[in-house]
Image (tube, rainbow, N blue to C red):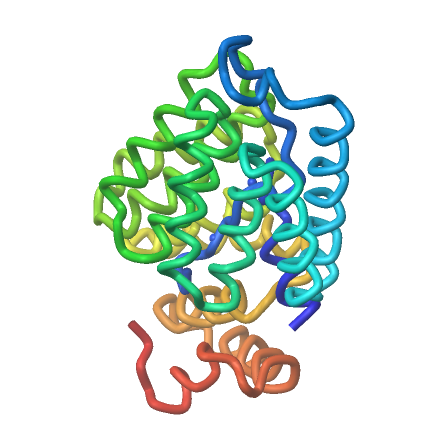
Length: 267
């Protein structure tokens, strides 16, 4: 579980999917809100304490300790009920414990408190894409990308690209993912999504080349091995297919991808 969470957090704030999940940033750095907002009136010590507990919650989450993460984030909110990053971060954690209704409530509260924070918009867009609200998600990625203060636009570009794939809009997906790669050229998650797009278009040679770069950059997880296996199967390379299957079986015998292989569900 911890290893899987750490893999999924690679793009939490750079920020997720048989179509790969690219989860959002949990260690938030919010854009300062206008002076007239509630946050501006919060005493400095209260703001600092809420921020500290939010950062602790983020660290516990990244280490796979979801229960303690939720406790820390709830403490942050009890200290300062108007601290938007605490709600956004707790929304991410709630998603991973499958409390989707509560997660959406937290995200919407975060947006209500600080609609200008691009990290929060990116996080909420990611969440919406995971729960099947892809069209609404795209609007939040676009909102994040409009902010001149956004420090990691590559995250929203990549998340938007994965969401466009789910919508079946491969042209928009490729455009968005390539924009992400122009900012971070060797991001393996973006390269994986390009491989995914190439596979869906029937460009198996192109998919293979992208996947070669992915395995050069990271230790492949079940999603990468499964796509690579299917690419080699399409290209008729039985030796490569067998090698990938061996890795998938040995490393991830309980994964959905290996179960799909056992069922003969290659698509």
